[in-house]
Image (cartoon, rainbow, N blue to C red; front, side, top):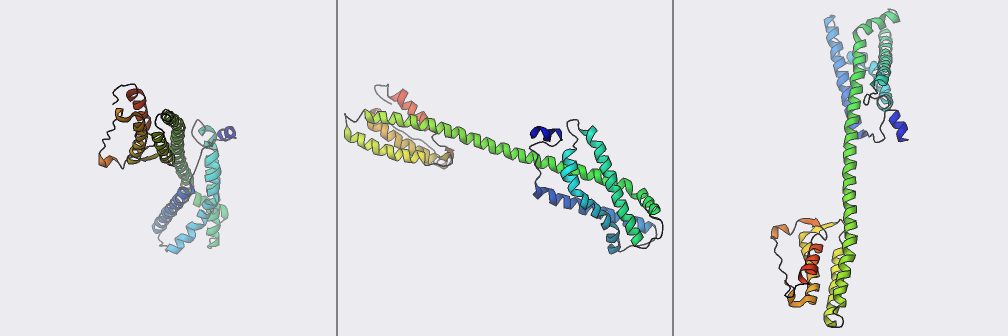
Length: 293
């Protein structure tokens, strides 16, 4: 499926946001109609007449109905399948040139019929040739300008959608990595804490029971965060519960001193950011030392 889309010139991740597309297209055609009406008004004034606004609308609007009818084909077929990047311009340029001429002659036909309906008695071919002399290049230019406009919108919205998707993927990857880290930290912390409790069951059952109660509170605190982060104040609170358990084990050998600026307590940090550092400090620093620390 992706290969066939690439062969047709439309990337599989192409995205065009209708909330951006349709307002911009409406703005384009309003500007184009206004420019055409101004040009018709200027040419008729040079011819010695002064048309009203309603006359200008009646002359210009029928031809633009052809543009509006052709717009879905241009936007969703021609601009999508026949692109100009990656060396595709040799295949796409003749198609768009033919399309511009077909639409231009469609507009000329409608304008010619409108002139006859308004009372012109000249032959159909003569009227069309006269209109084409003044408007054919303008109509072809309008097609190509509109095509570039559509391609620019498509490029912008596709790039924006790609950036949004990449941001979401990065966030999902970070959340996955954090979840993996937590699954590694929680059992590691739990097993070390249970080892500490088991060493005190025979020596001091009362202290072991208090440690079990502290473990329950600590696990509830460490497992209830939903978004992978919490405030530094909560992180320190968890550390204090953990060190309280370890202090029951080490007694006076373990001394705790927390130094933190009050303004920093509200900062959000990844959950369990400091706990493994403190755990390793106790395991490898305090436990082997005779005098503690």
